[in-house]
Image 1 (tube, rainbow, N blue to C red):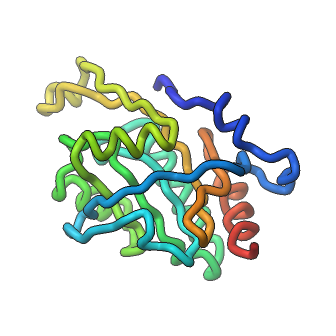
Image 2: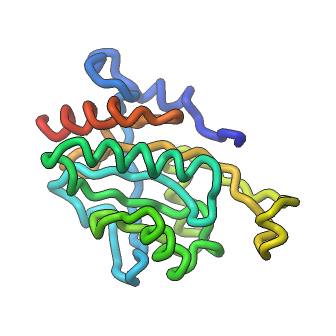
Length: 194
């Protein structure tokens, strides 16, 4: 899968003083203002988890390549310790038209994700602003595969960074693929102790 993620920019945001982190430390990343709805049609904003360290990543429910790997890595990280097991995870859609309420619920059920995982979607204009602020550029591409035979005529080419957001609501660290569950766990512990 093509990865359209600007590591050059993120490295410019990083701090050489945070070498104890496995991911890329971010100093001047303000995240993004947003108000989206989860799979239960409940509003979630960028301020919902203020005061809590949480994760933000970008997926789509019918993804069969990168998204399962990222989801598995996050789950493995969180399951390592009771201290972080209930860390909120905000999954932001990169496929606003395909990530219906039903497909998001099915995704969460398939992966046996707890209620601390919230799968967010909104209109494309809202999402484009968020994607831009998190340096993503998802692209729809036509596919000729089993998916297209099953009625899905497109795929989404995207990256799936995992951001650790500190308790003040600022992205503090980003992990890019391949996501190492042990490293993500260690960085979550470090950011939680700050």
